[in-house]
Image 1 (tube, one colour):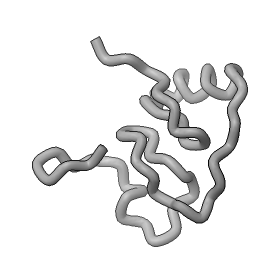
Image 2: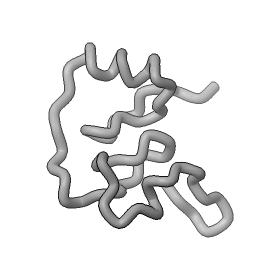
Image 3: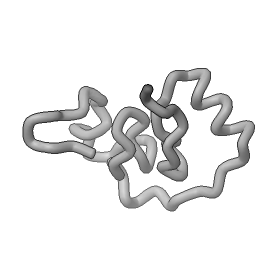
Image 4: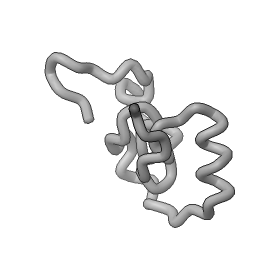
Length: 66
């Protein structure tokens, strides 16, 4: 989530028409025009390998911080 002192570095926040619904770094919605999708575990595994913290399709947290 973006807060005043802690801005997300992902560039999708500044795009007028981001290609994904959710930000992979903070999980905030960046494009409300894209519908939420239900994902399979295989898709989440692929996103984890890409080092995404959140799923860009459903917004689910993929990587837990230690």
